[in-house]
Length: 405
Ligand code: ADP
Image (cartoon, rainbow, N blue to C red):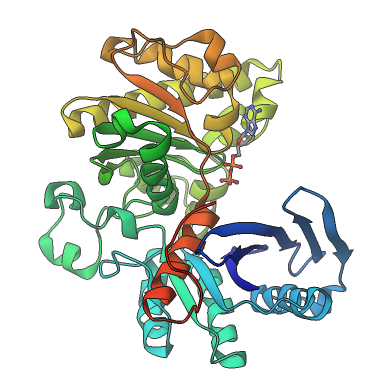
């Protein structure tokens, strides 16, 4: 059986999934796992396609000291216990910089190029690249593909890609990249099946998870994003600020004497829903809380989401559809209802019954703007990219055509 391993490596965990590729190029998810607690309490957990537990085991801290070691452990489990040797590995890489507008087959030259973008995503890029480098050294014949969160947004108009700063800084790489591109690309493709009536129109996709952003799609292509140079901009998130006046940062450094590292930590880890509520970074916990600050954090999230939706509708010069996705978007009836309510002026009319039962289409039949809930699947997107890139290079023998499960 040909299989593709999909890897999403973070600072303290490596998430992985295994997809099989059948004779006609259909991808089927077989395993979903993660090694977390890297450097503290390493633990491997994995489930099969039906959700049954395949592994749940702890490792001594010294045997999984870092992210590459975690991936090696997980690979050894796949190889030694399940006799699975993936034909290829697809990696989520947060930053493709200005150059990559599509996935790329990795070699030493590509790695060297991607390392240059570490400065653009210092908290993510090194963790994404470390396991790639280690696989390249240990399994040089194993094809690896990098799939970027930025790539889907690389064809924005210049006016959407610039900050109002001297052009030489743009040339240096200070641009409005946008993120969550793999999620938006998956949704754009999925809409062709689940909502063909809006798939080629003007659509806002709201990826509302721990990280949150929104994307304006026109004809299935990204034309604008609420995120920019980093994944800090735009909507408030679990622990990240979202849009903030840069003057606040100047104040924190000059008046409060915060160091660069403190400010970075603050903006990424202590703000957003967590900072505002003082209760939790988790939307579900906020919804279950009686604390008025938790309620305020939800109010703020809804307000900012609707505000930024207005901005994206302006970028699109009108709107045909609105799609909710990711943890909050797929699951929170209340947040969806409240954002939709704030978009009534644009022509959104939600059907409360369809919304409560998490239907795919949750707008009323007479709603001018059609509203959908579409679960995202970034890992499947990565597997599809990996398969199609390698298949074009004849690395896979059997598949005749790329198709998603
Ligand atoms: P990520 O993949 O970025 O870690 P997710 O897409 O899994 O994030 O989204 C996590 C968020 O989704 C959390 O804030 C969580 O509380 C929220 N969430 C998940 N299920 C529900 C639910 N039933 N109601 C409200 N929020 C939910």
